[in-house]
Image (cartoon, rainbow, N blue to C red; front, side, top):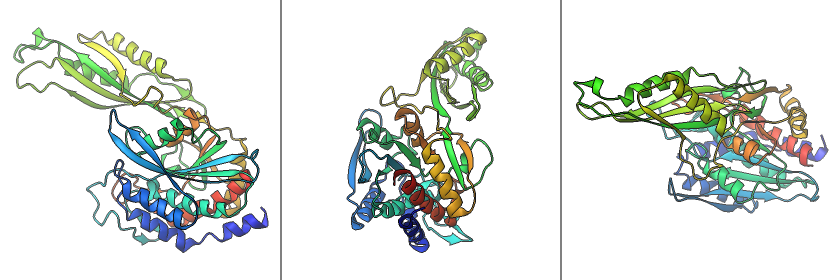
Length: 404
């Protein structure tokens, strides 16, 4: 590690970083309602002289969403040196009702900071904000792109999608996403950890069409709800793909909607089914799997296998794996040992997020490294404060090594 890098890492102030995290947690920012936190992050970067910009995000057809990401760039001295993307999302899930304290308190107790979104992922957001400021002063050969995006928790990941559509990622060579990794890893691991890939996801949107009849004479109809239930059960048991790194795929029926007449055999039904996939399972294969299951059941009703409506055909969470030999992996391994005294565990994510867009759609070697906690998306969510600062310091050291 160079003396300049060592100084930059050592200058990461613990208290200042956690105070910034508290401020972020105290801003309510569920997906599609991120205006206040967008402005806060922009103003913080602007006050630090980091030249942020608002990056418009628009999806008029399905959601009607209009918002903005916050982007900034630290230009390197060598145009041939690598460019690294540092990414975090600004939004949280909607505040859940089970909290028995202020869900936006940012309360700290026993090394844990509490609040909705504290772990997922305002801890990671604070880390890239502080790290980017340090890296902008480090006179690196390579460039660093900062992105704080909207709608990761929403239905389509519109913020990251807009970045890809607008070419923001085109000159990037790799990406770090500071999501909490170990809590949703395929195997039980703990920080320090590097998550080098993730499964993908499709959402089946299936229509089952039967035939209406009087409810007192069900034999005269074709009950779409009954057939949808049978199909849901069969899909839940279907064979899925497997991968040596990503593990097995999975299937989970989410909802059945249909019927409702007071005394009629339901003539139609809608079935939504989650399908997490591994490398090798593309849209055509996933559709064919469900069609084969439906055909084998030989249901009375007609079945149409489709997928959730999306803003564009490529708005899909594809699976990806980053090579363990990639230079950024090595840089993060070295930073982990330097900052924490431990070699990082290697793991793979069980679900999906913006990292799938970067790793699969943008084809960037993408690594998840972020502070962990518990109760994400639920009451009592917290992040470990020590890990927030550790990740911040690791980002500075690893980026300096990779892009320096």
